[in-house]
Length: 73
Image 1 (cartoon, rainbow, N blue to C red):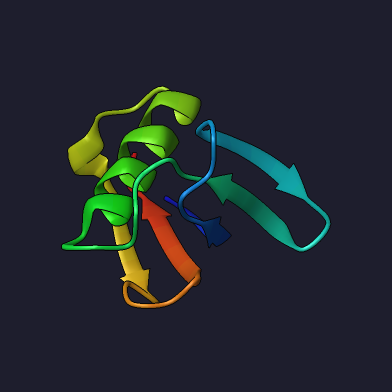
Image 2: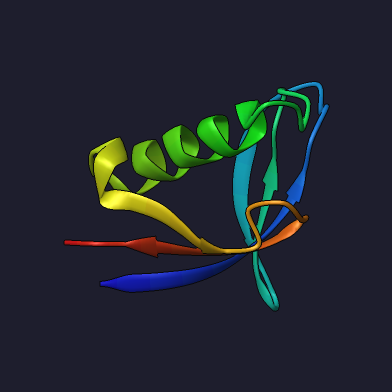
């Protein structure tokens, strides 16, 4: 099980996930409306780490830009 600290920037031109000094930076195309950005973040992390989307959960910060994301093996 991994826990990642992710800073999310919604409404980006392209979706990307990169490692930075203090965790991860996710740039998401989706707007932060109706959980669309969170759903895209989960899909992006699942793709990056080679796991299924249902193995990725947002443990804290679902309504903010800083999130704690857990990946279950």
